[in-house]
Image (cartoon, rainbow, N blue to C red; front, side):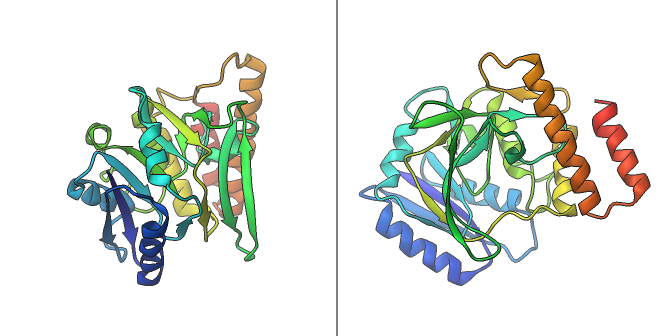
Length: 269
């Protein structure tokens, strides 16, 4: 039994998703909890409101601009939680998170994802990468928010931080960090979705990323990579620094602001 929670502002997307779920989830009891959100509150609050209403133990937090391409995916989700240490599963994520504010996707080659992605230019492509040799799943420390499944009992311990994060960014990284303190996170490869929008980080995203890093600074960096050498870790941190500097410039922060953030998040960490 599954509770599917959606923060929605597009009735057309929601209707399309609900029809798709009915056709693909399989022979399993489920409910769709649509939290109408026209910008009056952030996605953390929306997801918490939805989870509070949920009847079932398995919770799926999903964006409304997706479609499921895999049939009978409901039973597959349930099966992934048979291990007691599994805290959350998703369809994209990273096995490394640096001390630098960043997206999960910057830590190549230690990323994992599988989805049909529509680009900003309107091109549909299959994005697929697995840093492990396991064809079914890859352990990660952060999950992308397009799809996150967890247990209600875990959500009750790791509610989305709606006091810290008021907008639509950072919630997935923060939730991943919370769950990662006691349980394992996995990207799974037996469920395929189609995602109709591509992430486009901006200054608001950067502010949320900084808040999440400030909250977890004593726990970062974190990873689940076996036999990661000091050299490799240094290289991953350098990748994050380069990405951070580029984004500060691309988001048109003033020169002195860029200097301040570089000192704060690079030199003083």
